[in-house]
Image (cartoon, rainbow, N blue to C red; front, top):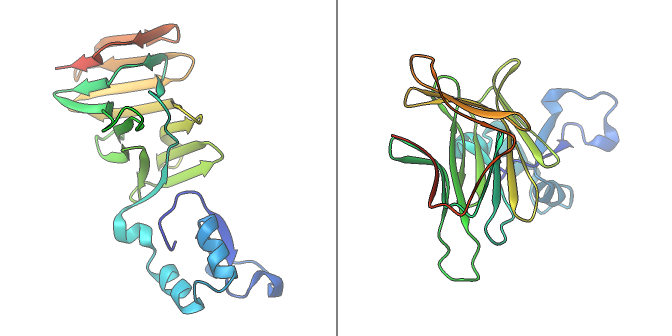
Length: 220
């Protein structure tokens, strides 16, 4: 990885694709489409590519990332809950886990910010001013089309989200802990929060929505 972009293509570098009789992982690397074009056109040297293969930028900065398209006030679907025109969507113990920053001017886009954790409370992904970042310590991060899936371990899906340009993000599946709370959600089904003792505290079905509020879901 040269730049740390999360949208990738595979590049055969040893040997080049046109000369390859077999394909092995040692001779293939992941590049974003822009970097892939730069490598094949010679704008990124072979020595620089080898340096990136040995020391991927994602491990230097700690995450891979991509930008969300933002127009107007985005709609967020969190499991079974749809939220519109609500600056703070989810707040736990004074920390905003999902919400928007106010634009600096009337024509500027709203900035979506979020923090997602795994079932052990460890951060696995975040969104910072419409740039989503998946941390490299995850077992696997897979982006296909508009959908990103983050796994904490084999068959352990911690988070699935997709973007629907120009102004919608859908958290299809979430299973996380934060400050002792367990938050689970499934698109088209429910969003549920459980207390540290396991008791159900809150549940929203797929017919629930929050529109035009200062804050959506708040747990103190």
